[in-house]
Picture 1: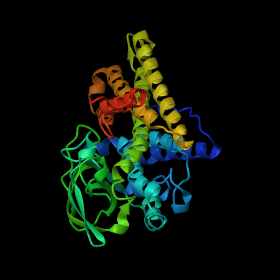
Picture 2: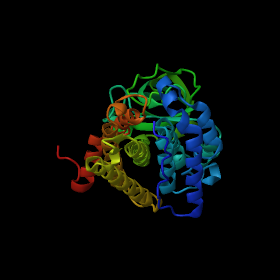
Picture 3: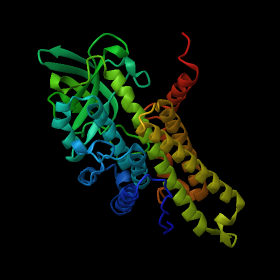
Picture 4: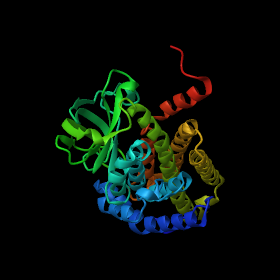
Length: 390
């Protein structure tokens, strides 16, 4: 494998503090994450101890208020931290993004009392979160979910099954969307459920083509009882809370996708400049040079779009359309870039001795999670032309 360290990305960051943060994250990623990524992914090992280190370092609560243990960082900085982590290992970058997604409902819609009680441990106390919206029969049509919460005095009793849950079965807390009213989006409420609640269990992890180190599993709720003090927002507000979280979460997926694409480009450049054929490096051949140029351009375009969307969010302006655009473009670009990286490495790209094939397998899932790219096109079109006629 070529022994050439990836070059730092030339980033536009708002402050010197942000530049120092990115440098520290990059150093941590190259020291603690990247050297072990291939072996741990191949073995299907989840790096729980590493997430403890990230929590101690303040990296699990970056976009949230310092008042509750967060990092008070703007989203444009937080996303670029995710990109660095995902470039080292997608299981880690995506894991941080999902944890942040799981904290969103409480941080944004929770009462002051709820935030004081729970947020410090969630943001910097070593806990790991999961986000429970999808179900076996409701993926893209999330408003048709069937998991139900029934009021019983001062408690709610939850029954049902959630599917495709990142950190399912190992999370310390779950942000759960459950039906408390009638059919449709207005009958859904959000709850904060502890991972050790009686009646909560995780199924065996799914056997995936990529991200084997990140557990994705069904989560079963069999009479899980939670007090009303763990209800987040108003009754019936859960679907709006879920969509709000997904807008931000899609930017996290976009940043992770660019991280994977950047790692694939670095690998392709290292290989192309060191591999010699016909008496010279293969990077001298115009066909490969043009491929590398296109790959780099796709990455820069994706990065610019997700950062632009993040700046809208930081300014308190609507960003749902731009989040969908960023998720769509960045993940599609990552799929193309990683496929091209495998092609540049030739036969070696198809072997597990080089990471290019892993990057390609990982890029695929990013076109699916947190709303497929077909759903993103529907969201964008709805902003442009209004809702579909029935």
